[in-house]
Length: 342
Image (cartoon, rainbow, N blue to C red; front, side):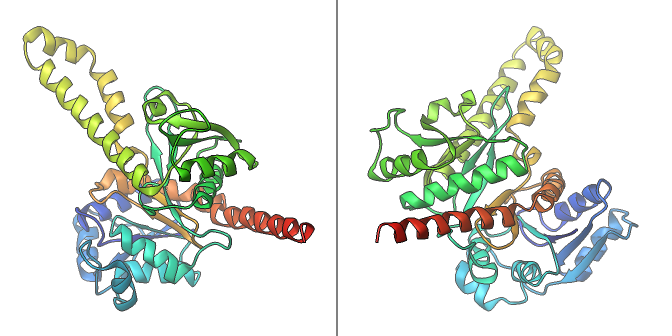
């Protein structure tokens, strides 16, 4: 397997990207390709003492920043690390592309360079959602599509279920639709129509779920539009950090509380790790004809390492191909039904 890594994307690139690549290279036998300014990346490999042969560099003379128009940048900056990485996946020169760079550029590149899976109208970001004391859920979509149609939400459920099964190892995962009430008649025109589609599908759909119940592990795959999903992720991240800051502040108020913190240190670290995005790796962009993983913009070396490790089962389990096959079956059935009604 050849894992392509954007060496220039993210707030802490290229240093943390190189560190993470070195850490991952010691745990897998696959080749890692760093894409970016060759001289700089080579200097960092030498600085961090890498002497192996499983990391190589492909030069990219340009980068795409977050403040650029994603579509224009992808079309014009052919020598950027993002465009080169996606082009290599398209041309069979790499199996997966990982980046902490511009989300918009990655989505635009996914559409224009790789193309959509047949039957999928809107690709989606699927983010692992931490659940305290339980296995995490998968939240789809978390930012690719601010506005959606009912069919898009059905597609998100299908793609999320396949990823949950193949990569995270949960067979026949349960699927829930984020809504303002659990009753089937609740919600907007979008959620009501999406509910009907999901309920009629072959997915293991359990109905509507309220945001307050997400931490109760009510389902494996959480389906929502990208605007709502992005708000959920950022609110959860912010609340987790706030709780940890408050605990730290309270534990520092007296000698007795400091002793209590020392006794609870293992438990506190465990809670912190459950809210730490770095432990879960990047978010796959599902629905394009290639394996793409989007890392958090402020990813550190640990996040890069974990994303590389998560990329291995993503590719080995043929998630992209499985989504394509599933959608082909659905399109074929829709065609048969249309013929039967003529």
